[in-house]
Amino acid sequence: MDFNALLAEYLAGGTNLRSAVSGMSREQLISRPVPGKWSTLEVVCHLNDTDANICHRLKRVLSEERPVFERVKPDLMQAALAYHDRDVEEELALFELGRSQMARILRVSRPDAWERAGVVGDRGDKTVTQMVEGAVWHVAHHLAFIVEKRRALGIA
Image 1 (cartoon, rainbow, N blue to C red):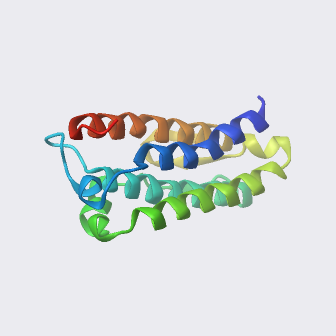
Image 2: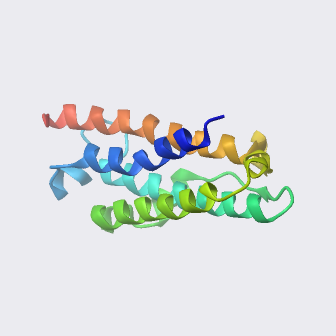
């Protein structure tokens, strides 16, 4: 496994997310142009909150023996955590800062640390490598939804 390449991809998530929302007004960020789907700001908040959770998990897996975690409940978080009252720039900054800190920690971790595992709800054992890969995938997955919203709003 090329850990440096994976970390570069992980860190690029912040830049990619920032680019995806670039040029959107507050009204566009909070609109729901695709029926039944979250707004762009809700997606950004979800990514930030989930990423903070992943960073916490990674730190615990690196420092504890096989910790156990409950699954994140995105709909409950969206309903309770004032997503439309949050600031997109603050969310992006926190997202990027969290990933930067985590990448710094992982860069100096021994290679065998990447194989340490924690138990994630009903998903079972997840290694540090799998968690970082999952974090990379999660952003890419949600970027497609932001693109869909931009199209629906007529934003290039």
